[in-house]
Length: 279
View 1 (cartoon, rainbow, N blue to C red):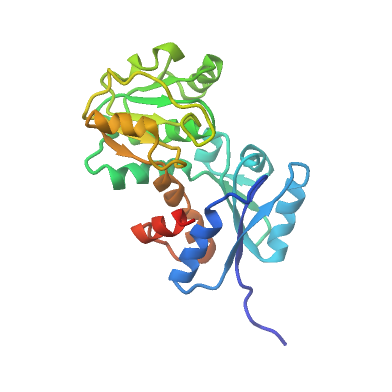
View 2: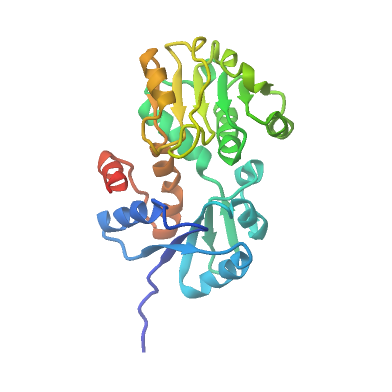
């Protein structure tokens, strides 16, 4: 008779997914805390997503992270959805309950706020307007987090204005849309500036907006972390701004899921950053 408890399993689901840093991140925590468990990458097609998710609890999986292109679909498949995942319109963290129900959450906004609070001491989102560049899924998470944290106004610019207008419709009048050609002007008086687009990422076009209006007192964050210090952050640093790279958001957004799946709240520290960035 085998009465040993099952070893908990978790995964990151995407397509492609081989590039994901999440297995390295969660594997480090499992080793650090001496916990039984495994975290694996799963490349799953759109057509197979629901059937795979429904089978995973039977296989010993306690949860999963979800990445591109499945974040929106995972939200629709889930049986239970948190308010913040509903607001953002996407799920990045799934918990498989003992009854087989799939519980969906989005921890990207949490990761964004923790990253700024840790790396920009004294940052107060309530002290003035915020500016967000981009209108994709990451921007939705950032806007939701800034709004919840008390930012009085969130200025938004995107190359396709219609996508930015859609966020205004979803989040209300606190979000003020600016034309892309006026993106530099919207930075005036902002205490928080966030690049939530892919511009500046390795292999993507650079983020070319004027920073003349940027205050040296602003905290500037780029969600891109390849490269770790983008040209956008370099220019902001030269102006005297406090700059925060995007890696911390990736690390902090993983904390709530790991705690739910493996029963231990992990720490984000310099050793973790080193392990995740190691070639």
